[in-house]
Structure formats: C-alpha cells, structure tokens
Image 1: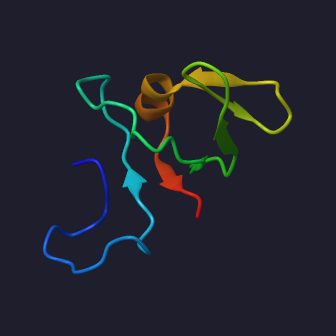
Image 2: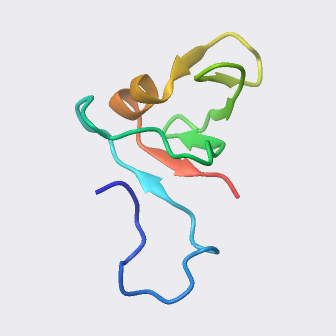
Length: 76
C-alpha cells in the first residue's frame, strides 16, 4: 500500500499521502515528486535528476532509498 487514502473516498486531493517503510520493490516514485518529511522530521525536497535533498544539503537520496529507510509523509 503506497498511501493512506481510502479508495472509496470522494475527492482525495486534500488528503496527504503516507508511505511506510518497506523493502525496495516495485514501488515507483510518485509522478508528482512531492516534498516529504521523514520520521526524523527532516524535510526532503526533490531536486535535479531523481534525487531528494534536505534543506542543509548535507544528505541526499533517491526515492527508493528514502522509501526503504523512513516512514514518509507528504508535505502539502
């Protein structure tokens, strides 16, 4: 399961998505590349290529790496 939305909800555009830690698998990066916050409260923002970076610039990771290491919550 990739997000917290229920498939039976009406309009889902105002519900933040949640990704739970899982093994790296066929879970592709969301097409819209949202900014996310991890379970350590760091904000990861998409940057050039397929990378995400925290504000300090000290850490970067791909979506697969983030998804495999942290619970992620979409930042609206």
